[in-house]
Length: 265
View 1 (cartoon, rainbow, N blue to C red):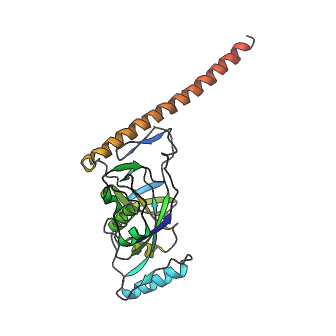
View 2 (view 1 turned 45 degrees about the horizontal axis):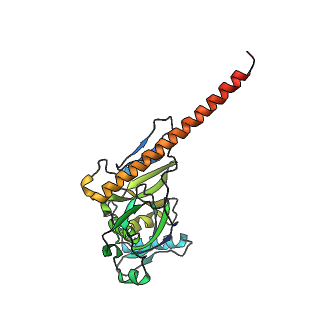
View 3 (view 1 turned 180 degrees about the vertical axis):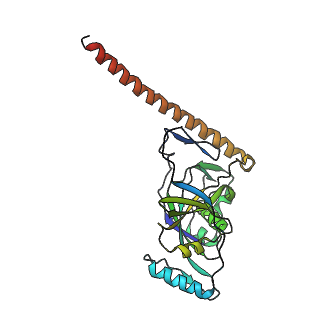
């Protein structure tokens, strides 16, 4: 599996709607109670796997797929019935990832020889990956979701446990955006073939693996300490936002009082 794509450099800020949305080391978000319309993002359990197609069906599907692919990213069928192609994965990680600290960037030699730079140091640091970054992967029909996740983490030199992440397929149906969590044994390229090359019909999203309960034992001591640092920063940011909000209210009230006092009774 090869990885290609582009992403913005540097660090990523927290969620834009900080006034009413913030996150902690837990796996869920906490939003202030407001009268908002229900979200159109609905998570469903992945569908049951379908019957494997015959070689003739594969050939027909791939020919149809390639005839609609306009970016020279078609699929290639091998004599043994396997095939290769490209998928794009949107990274929507809202929590920081752990990476090695103080190592050089990966060179072409490292990529060819599959040198694991993360294993060259025990030092770790955490940062936010840019939201909505997109990575293009060249994979095989036998490449599983688990291998896709591991390949993405290796590309970014992320040393977190792959089980902390999950791959979702995002589809549009009846005016809604549906997210379906994929099994680690699913093959994304087959799903891409079934849906066709249009990313508006089907796209893949890497997110945190929301299991409901936090497996604290899966985190190392530095990770837990980093969570505390993040919580303290979020707390200070939230305090400053609330102070600014009420300072503005106070200023408007004082201006209204001065205007009312200046008017003849």
